[in-house]
Image 1 (cartoon, each protein chain N blue to C red):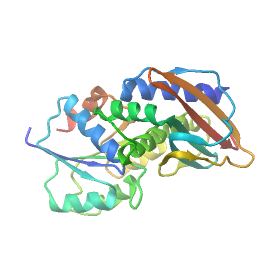
Image 2 (cartoon, chains in turn cyan, red):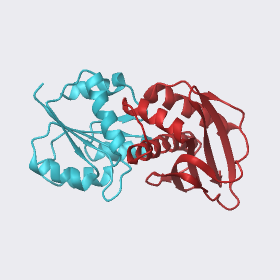
Image 3 (cartoon, each protein chain N blue to C red):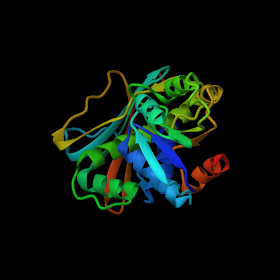
Length: 123
Length: 152
């Protein structure tokens, strides 16, 4: 596929599970990068060519909504698509994420099929 | 009782979808007295219109089984991976139970999940909280999901 994905989650376990689900869904990215919060994600995006970001919402230091807001203000990275992966999928918070540029949301718990349904159209 | 049903439905969905284990709920029961022994507990706090604590308590063997299935790997000891996995499990439980409560008009914020483990420890209950505990069984043993809530 020749593409790079960035997985943003404060849980090392969840980063591994998302990575495994991408493989199980047949989405074989060349590189899978990881970040533990929004601030780290901004640093990774500043130093790497990334095609897609999968981000949790509820994280310490800089949460997913704050990350979207900071990314939208940075011309160099604002066009990189972001999909939220979270237990927080209420209409209010997803509406806020969408208004800040998020391209979709995957609810935890998720299956490889549900991951594929949201992500494949973005690649 | 509706809260217990929310806990049962959410727990079964998470375990069947992401941990690939069938879990069987028991009758909702009272909070166990005395300390937890050789166990792992994951917890997430709730604030806002509902103030509460969602916790899952597993003995070490069950925690290792659950983490192994969660990550798709062999788990031999209770380490940071196990605590992280059980904390994330609590996070998913709390998030989905929050969604069930939010549909009823409650505005709730979740804390960052935490987890503890040890030979013997206690977790204090909130003052004046309504406590719902649902036991579950699976092949490798049993675990409990506990929801303490004020203002539901």
